Length: 400
Image (cartoon, rainbow, N blue to C red; front, side, top):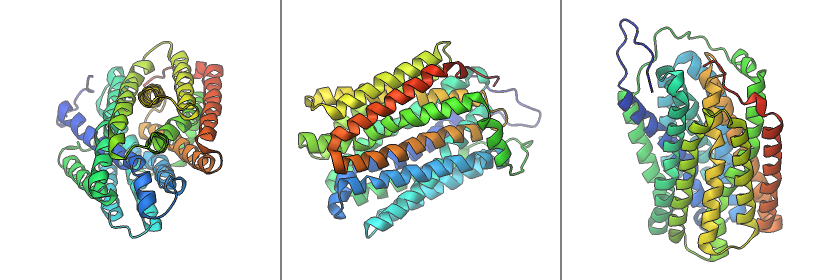
């Protein structure tokens, strides 16, 4: 991964330290976003609501994240990466610590909205920072590696959250996660590079969005991404609850399966960077959508043996993790000087997939059980594969 030539008067960026603080920021955002999936049963029991209602905590987080990633791209492109990233990290830390002391479900829901708003600022801003520092030749792999590193939150923090909640209650998990985000804020304050001085500091919002939305690539990529992420977020959000209810295991015992399926997501995210650079990317994107969605259907529709179910969920979420980083990396090649705006659009479709998926799946869970969720996943899979197959010619690389 080469860096652009250093202009006179500029300080060289320490690439290793730069990527390290970027990783800390994305890890904190993903931890704040995903931790709620391990806590739905615990929170539902403690606050006297159903799991379907508790699942709306995830819906609120994804909705706020989606709004944030949509709005923050032009701010980052116009005013710089550093202030937006620091503001997002500070909001994450404050909202997580506040959630630990929420007296009821409604106040917890409000804090989760703030968490989503803060966490949503980071992916487009930090991918934009990578685009500023890393040359186009190495950018796809760097973005794939970054999002894979972010998914380590699923491997490390989500199982840790389950164990910590089983030992000390769900409130303690928010205190621990908020403290982690404060450390991330400090690291980025000290070492995140300052923006280049030539950035035009004019807030141009609609023209940035319009210049990208009219491109065929974004029209296809946003639609494919939204539909297939519906299945991904349904599997991730209801995995722990399904395993607890179907196999009668404790929250603590779900920690290991949570770590296993998260490893699949890390591998899939890293593979996304490789897919972005492949000449067969459209075929690979469609295949990942289809095979991952079939695994989602089987996971919820068939009561498999415990470890077989874990394996199917691992394969499914891993395959469904391939396309988002691939499409994000490709978006930086089509978005010119509005790279954070392009990444924000991809992030918006990602989170809207979460909002749609979790909201519909929560309703189906209450009315038709997990079988209803299975057929919902299958329908979304078919739609995503058809879209990627019919319009795959649009998913080609741009000019950087």
